[in-house]
Image (cartoon, rainbow, N blue to C red; front, side, top):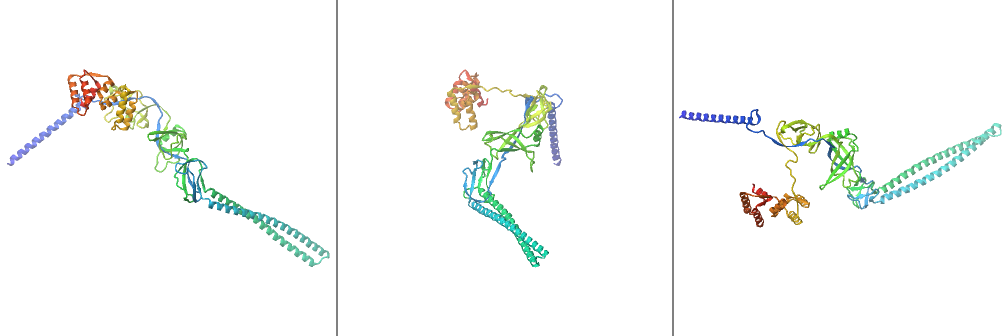
Length: 548
């Protein structure tokens, strides 16, 4: 029994081994056949595979590259209106609101003037008092000068009397007592003169103090007048108001912001370009004065504004790259712009001569392209990528006049045989017809009444139906949906075809079996199918629905 079990197991393993060997042999055989047919040097029964590729021709052009960027509109003349003094708002201008337009010198905000007028009156009173003090000091100086003059005259008189008594004493005619009395009188006169001179000095000092006090009072009056003028906020220049934050009756503090004044005629756009683009602009010449075009999309309508580059930012900025440029915008063209608008900016570079424009898909990052060579086989080449413009490349050192592959695919390479597809191959001009007014009106009504057609497509169809000539295909399609396709096609193209019996029977059977077709339309179709010549358009449309 054990011998039988082992024998059966051995037979099973032998059979399994032979099966695996047969499977391996078949795999090797198939691999050898595939090598012979596609990749080996041996001749095989298979044909070489061709790939259909789109090709274009290199043309020498003169191109002006465009640098595209995005920036934000700013106003270089923006002012925050703040209060110089505090107070209660008693009057506001009619235009003092967000978006209000004001003129230079217009009164925007009027605050309570009572305290400021009181301070001005007190300053005027103190100034008058200081002027009176100056006048009094001038009079006192004059009196002190007169008293000093009188004291000097009296001292001179006492000195002469003392000298005379000394002379009399020397000649023996006078006495010592008289000389002593004269000397005491002279000493008293000297003392009086010193007092008068001291009074004169005090009068002169009083004049100086009065002048200083007068100047201080004038300054206080000027401050009071300025504080009174600061109760009125005026527009320093023409502009638009923004961020208005004040109402009549509100209490304002010193240096409180009430609004922002923006000059709409001083708009500029700040945008950033790469270092390479900045280097090219610098190398081409002066940066300032380069023309730019700024575009703002307003609900699908482009607003284009011209401008010129004014300056570059002085620093790069933390976490930023490239260079930040500022461009002045044309005053007339920028009326619709506002600070904060995000717009597209384009700078036109100097023209490049003898270059070609190719799709970006035609070359890799190194500029390698594929050319169409002899017997429609591909050849490798390299071009110099000068600029990248959206989905296109501006290249130099191109083999002008040669055809190149417009889209590199992974399976394409040098030596591969291809089937070139050129622009215009297989393209035929759409057939156009003129419609009678009744027929045109019927088609337009059908399009307008169809609620399932998207609005954008409906607008395009109505625009085409309004033209003098309308595409035949569109007319046939619309009339087929309206239930008059065969008649419409026959009238549109005028082409007919003779059907054999089997084809005619197949078409009639399809029409009769179509339960969704109106009976009147079905009757007309069957009647036309019974004719010797049947409209070609009707036959094609029916067979397309049949899948034949």
